[in-house]
Length: 347
Ligand code: GLA
Image 1 (cartoon, rainbow, N blue to C red):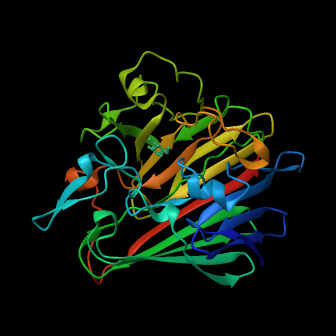
Image 2 (image 1 turned 120 degrees about the vertical axis):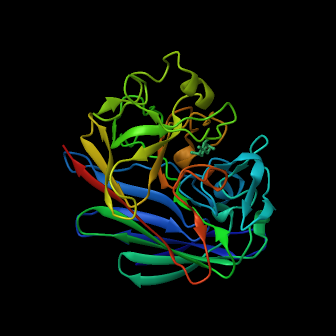
């Protein structure tokens, strides 16, 4: 595995970049800052490689960036209403960093810290971060390991393993923005998306889940068969208005805890197909609505609205305040596990 210095943090520590590659010529680059995927090059139907994830050229982009490009977010991916929750009868207050709510772990979430890296093989790297008791308001010291493996089947596999020394909540996710065309000045509106879900979790105007599960049938949320992302994104629909586009959690079919196929993303011009597998109960599909051209990405390209989309495997947003949702509590002696796989092929 190739290791290079990616840049220095303001306190002088070095961030490293690791390049994973396989026999098919697929390469994935990961930095230990935020356990972030910085590039992912996969072939089109003619074998031409292109990078299909948004990112920055330098560490400074990742340090100042506010869009979580490619990072592992946590402790809690997505929002916790008013940044408050109760656990075992005790009230906790988290950092408020999104309107009146808590988003993606707070001001200094898992995306804004340096992880320890351990090379486990030619195309396998493990990153570990120890999040101290009280960090961003969360109880307990949590040790999270994220292992990235690139397989010979053109799969990028992400395995999570977490433990705590006090009862807490844990719900990390991968926040890569994909654009399978490899051209980041094009939007993702022509990509076809399929999500294996009959329902989604509606939100209020602050993007906090209401606690209900709504059917996708006869709504713009119906991705049960492949649909262009742009087909209904501008429909007059309250949920789309709240999200400024798609920014919702789909309730995945099948048994949570078992890895199953949950989504497919296809870009016709290149023929690139990405299939997502996970053992998580939910998938947040975010259509890059808040990208606004203010951040200059790789090769100096400013990322405009909807030039990338995220498919974040996770527990449902605001679960700590929604006892009817699948639980996110982690207790001493228990192990948090997640496996999510992004598989690349062409059609
Ligand atoms: C998530 C959220 C969005 C937004 C992005 C980052 O996907 O659901 O609302 O915060 O992350 O900009």
